[in-house]
Length: 216
Image (cartoon, rainbow, N blue to C red):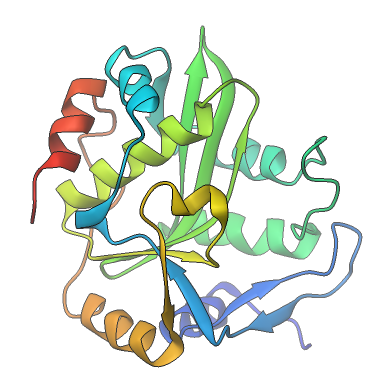
């Protein structure tokens, strides 16, 4: 594939396409356009009971866009549960550029100021395209996801794209829809604009649960 820049990357997202790499050592990326797409309907987001207690207790401090590069790096590290990663040097560079442009964001979970979990993704209009998440402490990435959903609802976002449906995401209400259905939702999300990074930058656990429980 020819070298791509952040503008081409945003255009791809606007058409339902995203890049991946074969492995962290791969020199190139390729485009992915799934026939079936995973999404989490924001008004149907489900928090398991035990996780709800964890969120309410504010065990982790959650911040936005403080250590984007570190979140990407930790998402790309091999772990016991994930031996391979698709985040190569080209992906790291491209999304770093998107972050500088205000189109890529991280949600970070801290314990005693140590980064122990988080996720990152891309925003375009009122859509958030989730890319990857990591956890180095129990439920840290799940708490970050809960904060993400609350933040998206407050900011008026309408689409949370997870790329694929996994058993892990299904517990939160993720579903699988056809490419045609996804493109309709993508167009609908473009009818307006979202401001992801503006205040409130951080919510308490109680505020997160209240926001998620409200319907749009």
